[in-house]
Amino acid sequence: FQRHWIGVTPMDVDLIGRAGYSIPGLASQPHGKAALAERELACYTDRFGMYHTGTGPTSAIGGNQGASCDGHVSEVQSERTIFTLNTAIMAVGEGNYGRLGGDQQRHYTDANADLQLIPDEQPGAMPEIAPSPDYGRSINRPFNERAMVLQAWGAYGTIWPVVHQQLGIRPDMGRDELVVVPQVPPGSPGVSGKNIRLGLDSVAVSADHEGRTYTTKVSTGLNVDLTIGHTIPRGATVGSVRLNGENVRYNVRTTNRGKEVLAHAPTTGGQTLVVRVQS
Image 1 (cartoon, rainbow, N blue to C red):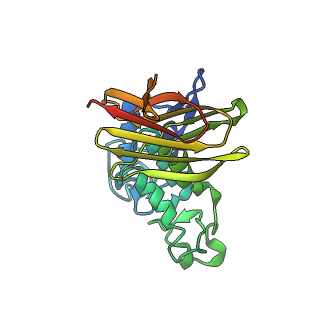
Image 2 (cartoon, rainbow, N blue to C red):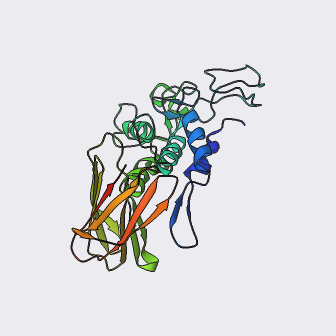
Image 3 (cartoon, helix red, strand yellow):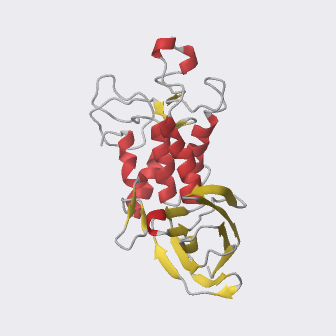
């Protein structure tokens, strides 16, 4: 147990099952949630994201350089340098387990997004390394010692959580299939996106959650097999599912995100799915 950033990858992975459905997260839900919750603590995370290697008890020279979140004794020294890739993987891992709150996924998506606005780098550019305890800030280092001013991998931690997880867009254009199963972050009135490019056309999606009602709206000109849905809490019980105002047959898949309520829908015109839960 060395506290490296790669410990998040079992939660970051998104697999495809034999039936073609997305399987978010490889770790079991109890293990995944516990691992993510620990990495939200001060031994792994600060304002600008997740460290390369967290702090804690260690047999390495110099001993522990920071906070302790567990009693394991590692063999390596911490590295409190925040790569935007580490933060991106943590953001996606949180989303795979339905952890979208302000101290969860949103902390990491905001951290990478904010880097494009602070005065350290070129406006609009996400740097390779964020301001970090063991690195400092690039702007304060000699020019030949600075990290890259722009690194694409961090965008994985802003675009994928919003498009794939919050809006729930899962295209399989090679098979002419599209699944849209959003999950609205807690405290948010809703999420929406339009002109999201898929193949030769695009899709528009909006989702909201109020009380026991979960609503998904999809509009696209694509000629695909469309499945529309919404993600509800694992402990919730479905009361009714209506597509464009009519009762519709549906399936429920329990995943690490929660329960995905899914129904087949036509692609002509806009489609509105409303899921109401009993509890």
